Image 1 (tube, rainbow, N blue to C red):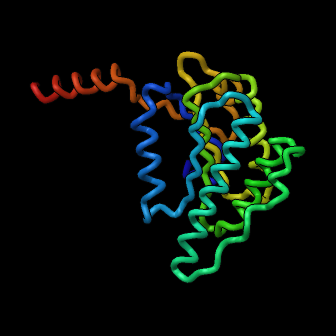
Image 2 (image 1 turned 135 degrees about the vertical axis):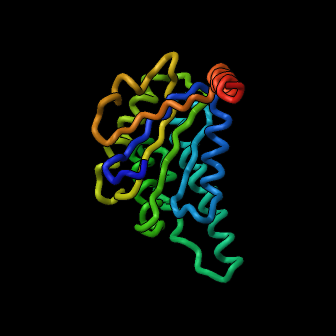
Length: 195
């Protein structure tokens, strides 16, 4: 997703094959040489409202950790999370959009922000599709410039792929992380070695 024209990356990976990919993303997140901010949301997608509320809780927790680290080092804390976003009367989509704008406002513009929506359990496929479509639309807003989306989909039962395949600004990534594909690669490597 290095292209400035790409705003979304669709990762086609089954839950049982995701451990290696998630570890790689975690390593990127912790690498001081990588300036980008990765916000990963891997909790179960029971429904849109609950998932978005869990995203907001996660952002609040991460902000509290960052502020604690900043103040321990003698720096000023970041602007507080907008209290109005705790209003349960707001639509979850509105809360998420405002939270994304807030995060973009506190992160320097030269650093990209990647929202990784990676539920391993998915109870409401239509609502997940609705959420991804909504976030993609919001990424067109200039206030979110430098913000990217990474979303997980299934190879066996795709939810997002039919809508996103061939769309502008969308890259599709099909990592070969299943045990069967790794065994195949190992066997191919072994036969190359023995020749």
